[in-house]
Length: 187
Ligand SMILES: Cc1cc2nc3c(=O)[nH]c(=O)nc-3n(C[C@H](O)[C@H](O)[C@H](O)COP(=O)(O)O)c2cc1C
Image 1: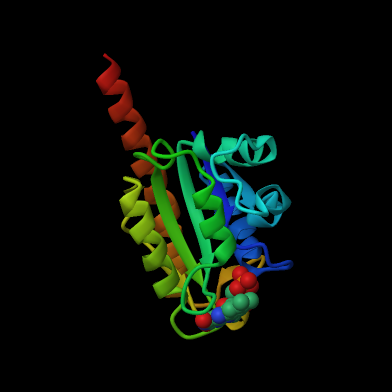
Image 2: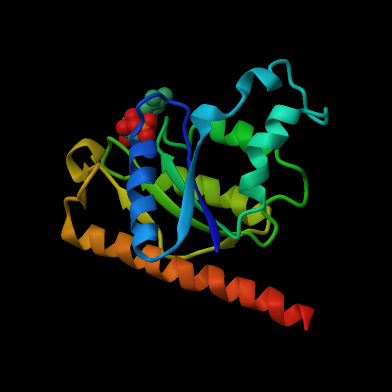
């Protein structure tokens, strides 16, 4: 199974990237390879000036492992009550309508504020819904990220850690089920 964890910001030293790396270790413990892809590496210079519909090799190279994954885990911070602009730019440069079509997706929100990016994740989910993604219902929200997250030990609240562990275990099953469905359609 080929999962990708998308760290949803280009902010240097972001918690999104730290949470993504931690979540990667949880998938590793389950025997699943889940590479982290950071939007810090999105080739933004390639799209300056609005280069929609143009052939953009660096963008194609960046997005290729994401759109070819069996499933995606999005780690999304809260910026101005929404998700970061770079994440929307990334989506707007995906091929339409194929990208995200029937793509299994799980969501983790994180913020310095009290709501753990609930709004950001739900706004992102409206787009995922429009793009016919298969959205995994167990979501995890981490508020007050500086206090509630440790890079080595994970979440300080045992209840939320349980939710995260459950998301990881069950998302693997969810992705497997969608892969099986594809197989069934083939035979
Ligand atoms: C442009 C910007 C806007 C932000 N807006 C919010 C916000 O609306 N609500 C909030 O709780 N935190 C907000 N934050 C703080 C982030 O939640 C905080 O940086 C946290 O560490 C998660 O983001 P990170 O993954 O970039 O570290 C904002 C941060 C930035 C850079």
